[in-house]
Length: 328
Picture 1 (tube, rainbow, N blue to C red):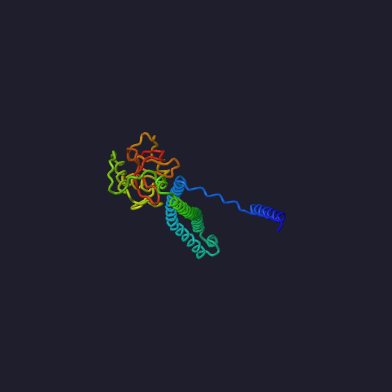
Picture 2 (picture 1 turned 120 degrees about the horizontal axis):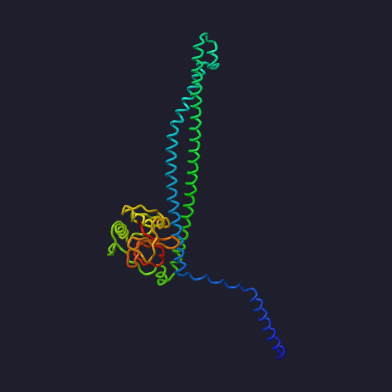
């Protein structure tokens, strides 16, 4: 091939390759952005969200029990009212039947044919008294009937509330499971060092640990009960005897001391007397600002609490706790 022709061919080949490269670049899909790396903060937030939902479910459970108690009370009232209602109904029915048997054409017709004026007047007075008594009975029966109807309407309303609450609780429990699984999956993606950051400093835990707590009276009983649960697992909704969530642990600890406190974190703090964190004493409550988690102060900057699923009742520091309250 002549030199000119070879040069022309090379130039043509290079131009074709460049054109193909340009065309190819037009059809290259942009690379997908890499998903952001999971951080210990993300995992901690996922666990936190699940626990906050758990406290909502606990409150729904408390409210549902109160509604069920109301249902039981209203049902008992209805059963009691039905006895009087049926008695009144039977008496009125018997009176009407008896009147028709005695005087099918009406009680006064019989009297009008009487030849004895005194008997007529006496009989007329009796009929008037009978009618008056019957009117009172009818009025009382009407009141009983209305009251019974109202109680049945109340019963239906409470039953509807309970059904809605159970549905809401089931929905939130499903959400808790989803958030927990997400947090658990994210936790597994972290390195050992990162996982340690999620849980904070290694907790003091275990049934054989010795803790000296400077408390007395009911506070000491509550603290001792909580300490006896060291090492027992966290379970959503757990209130003993062998598994706990954060508010369930405190509720039963104070119950052991003869003190009744609410079931849920927010009400537990509201029922106690708010104090500054600087004035903490053993037995005091410490909670997160959003009322999603609670623990019991032991002194020396230590807190006993039930942290989250996968962990056990443990002693930890005050990190994350910002609100304080004292029982009694």
